[in-house]
Image 1 (cartoon, rainbow, N blue to C red):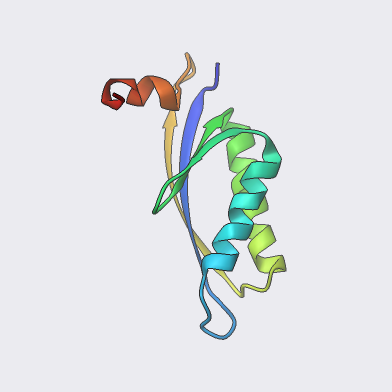
Image 2 (cartoon, rainbow, N blue to C red):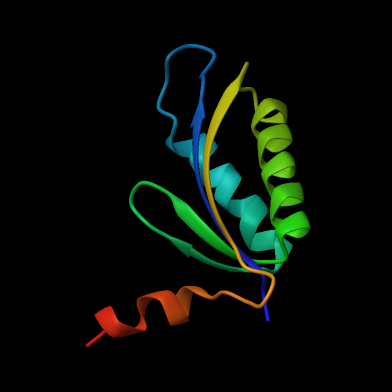
Amino acid sequence: MPNALLSIQVIPKTPNGESVIPYVDRAIEVIQASGVKYQVNPLETTMEGDLDQLLDIVKQMNEALISFGSPGVISQIKISYNPDGVSMDKLTEKYRP
């Protein structure tokens, strides 16, 4: 069972003040390519997996945004860690119809 949930919001700087959406899309592509379970929400994306793996994905996301042309990135992160296991489904099941 996964031991961590990690929610991330990336705030990339853009070279000429253009929209950040293509940059955010690129960051989500990194998550998709990783193979971890994830959920995109309006203001952040939550991933589920091993904490070390999720932190490595964050690093890859930041590197991808710089390679995509962003001169700098702020990443706001929230982590829920439990060595005995944690999951998005378990935490949200009581709110589902």
